Image 1 (cartoon, rainbow, N blue to C red):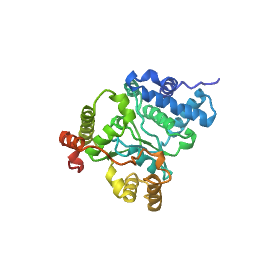
Image 2 (cartoon, rainbow, N blue to C red):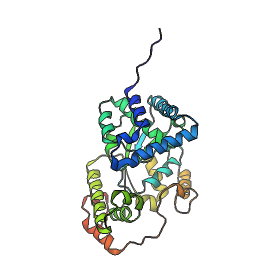
Image 3 (tube, rainbow, N blue to C red):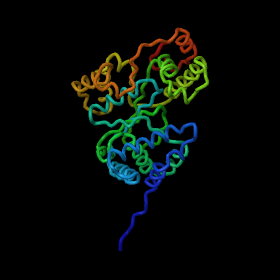
Image 4 (cartoon, rainbow, N blue to C red):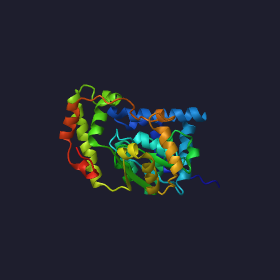
Length: 299
C-alpha cells in the first residue's frame, strides 16, 4: 500500500501566497506584491520552469535547508543607512546570499504564528530563497541576508539567526529619505511639500532609534564605519558572525563595491553631490529626539 504524505501547512501556505501575493497585501503596499511577482518571474526565466514548477523548486529547497538550516542574518535599519551597500559586499565573500528587503503582510504574519517554530521558519526561508536572485538549489548551504527596515522578522524566526543593527547619523538619514528617494516619495507622500515630508521622515527616524534602544542585537554596524574604515568594519562584522574575516578579500570587496568600483552599480550607493539647503538640516536636527544619541550620534 502506498502511503501519501499529508501536505505540510507551511508549504500549502507558501504555494498559495506565491500564486497570488497581491491578495495578501493591502492596496497601499502593492509594491511588495509586485516585487514578489518580479522575483518569481526572474526565477522562471532563469530556470525555464513553469510558474508552478518554479514555486515547487523553492519549496523543495526550503525543505532541504530545514535540516541543519544555515544561519540567517537580519540587518534592521531605518533605510538610507547603507543596507543595500553592506549586503552585496557581505555577499561578495561568497558564503552569504543577498535576499534584499523581505517583508510579510499582517495576515501572513498572523498565520505564521499558528505554525510550529520549525514550520514557520521554513516558510520564511522559502520566501528568502525566492528573493535571493539565484536558483534555490544552489543556496542550500548559503547564509541568507534580509535587510528589511523593521524588527518584526527576527521575532518570528527560529534557529540560527543573527541580528545586526545598522545605523547612520540621523540627520543624514532624514535628508536622504526626504530628498534622494524620489520614487518612494511619489508613492508614500506625493502631495506633501518638502517641510512636511521632512518632518514625516523625522518621525520615522525617531521611531526606529526608539525601538532600537529597546531591542537586543548581536552586533552594531554603522554607515560611518563602513565609509571611513571599510576593511576593518567588514572584518569586524564577519568575525562577530563567526565567519572568517578574510582581510585580503575584505579589501577587494570594498574596492569593488565602493564609488568607482567595478560592481558599485549593483548597489544604491549615492554618488552625487549633496545639495541640500541649510534649513533642512537645521530643521531635522532640531526635531529629532534623543534616542539616537544612545548610539553615539550628536546633532
